Image (cartoon, rainbow, N blue to C red; front, side, top):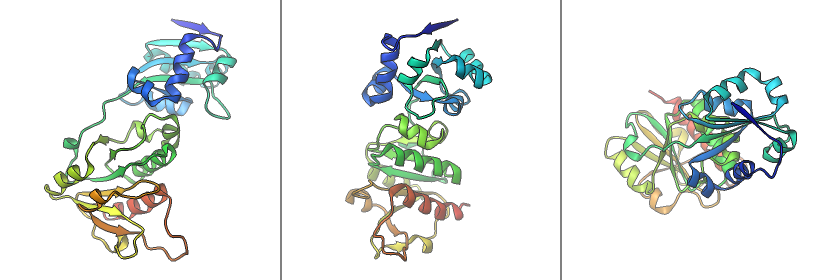
Amino acid sequence: MTSKIESVQNEKIKVVVKLALSSKERASRGLFFLEGSRLCGDALNSSLSIDTLFYTAQGLEKHSETVRALSAAAKNTYEVSPAVAKKLSQTQSPQGIFCLVQTALLRKADDVRYSCKYVALENIRDPANLGAIIRTAEALGVHGAILCGCCDVYNPKALRASMGSLLRLPLIQCDDLPQTLQQCTAHGMRAFATTPDETAKKITQCTLTGGVILVIGNEGNGVTAQTMAVCERVTIPMLGRAESLNASMAAAIAMWEMMKQHS
């Protein structure tokens, strides 16, 4: 049964706004916020559970099939006024479709498959960078991402930048990346950490077949010394005058090189 919400002061709407803005709120309630037909549809087609659907009359008119499918799956459904939709929206051209989705437990280090290829992200703090890297990883066929000290994967900016990839690519959470890498290399994997240091081996000259973990570090500080110590150091050769690359761009190039040798 669909109820209507017309006031921006409605308590349910205040909760949604908090969920969109606060990682602590998301963790506390076990819910995250999605906006738009594409992302809400991606959640519907994943193993995630739709808790609540909010839609406008215009959203129903333009995306009737998606709204009806979401409504059938959601525990709660509300039609909202344009004013409420404007309050909820974080985009310039809202489509009038919003969802609260139950968060999923991220996998643990023991779930790493030692014959596969992973990107490991250490202390990535920019949600847009995180989302872009995960989107590229999925597009290139990387088998999963290992996350350590990164920003919240359910940050709306990260979800939008990933174009739904954060809902699909296997994500592994670890608290001690050096220990995880040592565990993996003990089972025959190789770990490579990217660095702008020209003395490191060029990634274009590396053998990246078999099980590989490619580590991308923090936007400003790079890979930590502790993690670097258990990895093979690799660099992306650059002919121009730029000293380094944006984290998401460096990740894209490095993952491309890794997946070229996928076997």
